[in-house]
Length: 269
Length: 264
Image 1 (cartoon, rainbow over the protein chains, first blue to last red):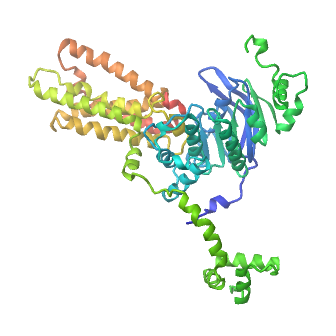
Image 2 (cartoon, each protein chain N blue to C red):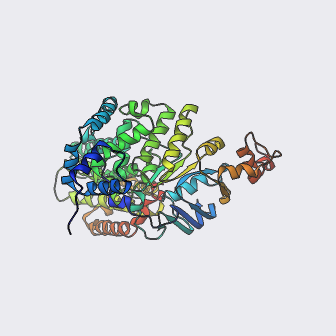
């Protein structure tokens, strides 16, 4: 049986960028601004979100996932503004999100887990089995689909998390540290999947691993202290660095050129 | 409007995959076929089926290798639409406490004795509501918070599941004039938990209310062995007003439940 393509899917888009932030500020706790005046436009493609620990990457991704309300500024997702009295439900149906601290119900099988998330995402009932099958296959867990979550290894659990994020074919896909716990072969496969997903949706991947960015991302967003430091292609980031900068690869050298030698002046490592 | 259908010869050539059909004609035939069922039927008859057979022979082994996904355990799925797996142990605990309270009340038939049902009924559902919307108890809270279903409807659905488990268990004690004495405080505490939850987070609200209940009502009652004024019939209008107030606040602030803040 073929999937029925709805009119909404083929309708022309009415926005220039899937994600548009202007002067965006997001508060964490009572005082700290984790995202502090961010101007950012992200279109279709894979965007690597790089930055030191505590730069505000997770807060930014949470704000993009609409679970944190912006304190100031404007955030537009898929052409509709978040933060006002907007209907979040319609917007959230087109967002996929994998949080950094990713929990699951241990007694669920992979299939039940992804099905449950598909239900939470209000997918039409008759589409769910096929969509779940597709998502589970795309992350390479088809042979484990009926195993309970608690029997899976760390890397497989991560992949189940990626499966639930992509089950609704999101236009905006937000992945917070998705490669943590994946072995090198799985990471290669994951990069392929990222490139595939990035052809027709806006994928934002937060990561520490610079080599993931170099291999899979069409665009790098460098983020420090809640502010945008750099946005451009991986090649342009590599061009920023010279031989005097710290790092093993051109992109790492570009990274340290833009952020300074990370942490050294603060007496950390 | 009259529609031009492609000639039988053209459909045949198209079905054979002839390379010498001009591109604009192929385009016209294809766009017509998409819209015209009778012509699709002609197309199906026209070809010798070799192409379809070839595709099918390639596809069939792959289909056998892929496990097809029927819905598993539909009853379990429907259950989890109301009760998350992390709520189950809490619901069982609440049921046990409710049954114990009812049994104790029956054994101690002394009319002067303070009813245990009266003391535990208000806080029992509060625990279940907290478990359904808690950062610490629900491992998937952040993922589910970002889904379209998250928000007040889902929270109310889970709350209703909690009430539907607790209230019948307490009703075993009997349905009489004193039922309202515990039922209204029970509902009042539930709606207040939800209302405060929108402001400070459901877990915090639940903990605060349980502490207040223990300090203000339970402790003096146990110390003096006398049913407190709040639980006499005279207190009923106040409890009723609290139920209504809680509901109003919940509805007015319904947007708050779609964000992570309500999970604290």
